[in-house]
Length: 595
Ligand code: SER
Image (cartoon, rainbow, N blue to C red; front, top):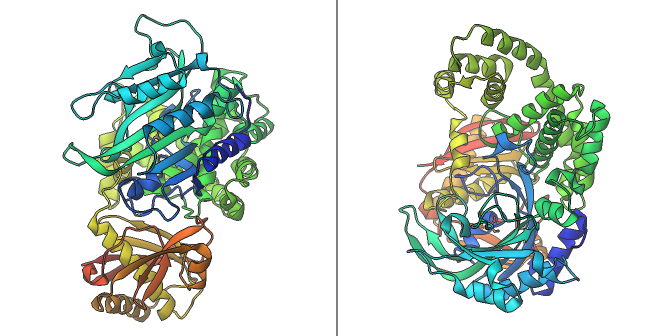
């Protein structure tokens, strides 16, 4: 097996697929466009869902990329050897182009060829879908593996639970074939297979054959086109190739780890407790760095993405404190990540000051109350009868001391208590209109059905963007963020003062004028260069591919965008601004609805 650095593995993968006719596309933002059902991009395929469902991609039918992903479902497990909330996925896609035969032979070549990963065949095992009432047994994939040279007894048939891939509950999906490294340890039982967790088999790559769309009623509909979606976790593959025990021993963490050692005077690995704290800080600061440094940079808050960000920063602060790291130092760890990753994700360097400032601000805010809050916590548990930590007290810790409920839960469980989370949520709801519980549900949820409502709100966002430039007579107004739920749109833009009621009314009128005109929404594909020259607006701090889609609505709006959109502006109804407020320094936020 080849020993590789993260930089060389990314390059090797992308070049391999480039040679096989794929276009290399940039990583999409960590914050999904127009998908209100999840807070973050959770898989390489996530930004490509519309194309897997049949929309035409401007770069063609063969794509490859390295995608930034965040999954927070297992955040409590971070600290163990394998969990991370941020990770990178190497992936390649066929959008109705090649299928099982080509993909399996390429997977075999990339894994075993000396030119690429050089994994000896005898160390490989694969799994395929065993078949059920929804889809047939995948003997076809098995036969391609055999042809390539994988012996029959290393090809395992497994059920849907293991060999079927879907992001969330609905959307494009299909059977997959997964590739494993056999570590050569003895079988744990007669039935030992890659499905068991004894540690003999380590998953390295997943090829999904997306031919179905799972509907909300649980049925599977055949897709118009047969797609391939593959995913190889970068850190995980690096750890396997380099023979290191965990993802935290790979080169992506080297700089940050050395920095924590320097700040704390402790050594990674010196004790279990210290290692756990190191891993939590390593992971959470990296996740915060990528969230703050994203093109759609978010800030800590009490709702949605901002809440998750707040939670990872505060948890890192708490564990930093445990290691003896002084206040105000998390950002020096973040800088190590900026240095490590900027070659691949230049937005981190572009947003370096923002990352440092926001981390310092949030750390400062929490540090002020952390000690007092811990005192309060320790006092309260001395007089609790039984082992349930009251929800009301958990809310007080949040409200007064800024303890995210998850930190209280964690502290409580270390002392043998369970928190009455329901009681906490009731107390929260009683105090605030907006509970973060909404966001918790969201990130348990599945991919959005890209429905008409969000498409209309998204189309209205284009008109709003254009109307602001006209009414405020300022062409330098730039989009700084956009978020759509089924109820409303939210649009952040660069502007340095509050809008007057007259201006807001004029913006509303301008958008409604475009709606009344009922002009068609026209899409054209062109090179990025041509798009810029045509005067199309875009978020140019973001990396676009070479070819882009430009959406034009009469003379009202021309914008680079991925879609989906309404067909004509007349479908939008009536546009109404509900709120205009500051989002951060120099950035205003508008919330609006369609009636
Ligand atoms: N969607 C699959 C995964 O995330 C393959 O990319 O594993």
